[in-house]
Image (cartoon, rainbow, N blue to C red; front, side, top):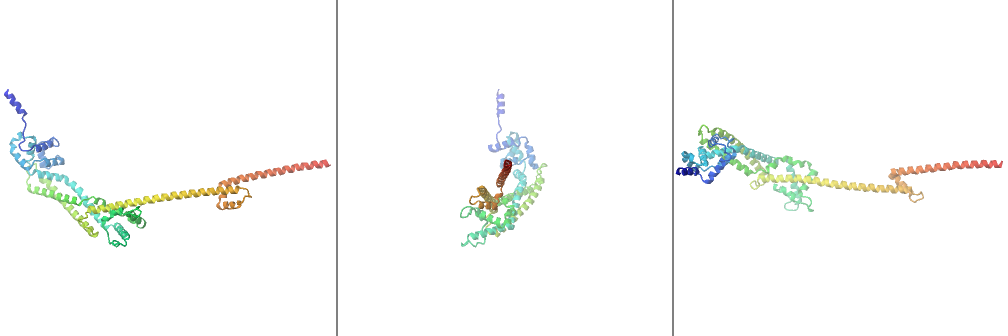
Length: 427
């Protein structure tokens, strides 16, 4: 009976943690039950030695980096290597992968390798766009001409004041053109500027075509680029340090030197290129700061290009607004002209009818001759209605003439008969 009790107690006995705390063990258990569920601990170790990121994905790498016990606990776990079967699964996994020397730096280097191309693709175009935008703003003749017009308008508006003879203005003033309105509060200074350009300098309307990179440059943060480049340089340096300290492979499975060595060389070359590009961009922005006389430390490239973009967008909107206003005015003008034309035609029809009525009145009516002359002069006497009436009058006249002729002939016949009869009686 005692043997049965002891056996049951043995079956119910659970393994206690030797080194890891409960939270660390739980995190590792979550990892083992998820992404690494179907991979043995030894295979995970081999993938780390191979620097194989096809099996050890970025998600797994981030979890390993986050959940990995501190170096002192990993070192202490090695003391229980001979008691492997008595360790919990979390501690068995930790003691297995901790056999890889400089485990945490290796995992971070593998993660950097996975993200390096993405960092380059995100950062390099930003540097290119900002560089191109600096060159465009400096070289655009149309934009420079528009700035001259704004300065002239400003001096004209401020004539008589101490600001009436200004030699320039700050680029940050450009977006404020939309908030400056006329006395009647109907149009803004931006609309007036665009209207002036539409009338006198239409070739300047396409100035935005010379500033094609400004939009993207307005979204570029120089601080972010600097931080990315600094972090990239630090990661490359750490990798180069690891390569220098691990010139001899840990085992036959260790591919760190071969794989990460070639990557470190490529990453360093790309970094140097991007670093030089960034320095060139900074130099061009320094030139802009000197050309437009602003403090580059207080007026960042992001703010500078954002103000130009805002001006460019407001300019385009004002141009559209002006077109709509002109179209509305043209519509009103056409409607008015059509109404006036219709009213004129109506009056003319009334006058023609009146003239025709006057012509049909008795000939003894006073003013008939005047109406006839007016109808002849305006041509209304030859209108369709008049022709019809004329035809009716002609037809009536013809019938009267025929009747008269018929009566005449009848009278002649009667008179002839009467004469013969009288002659016969006389005989």
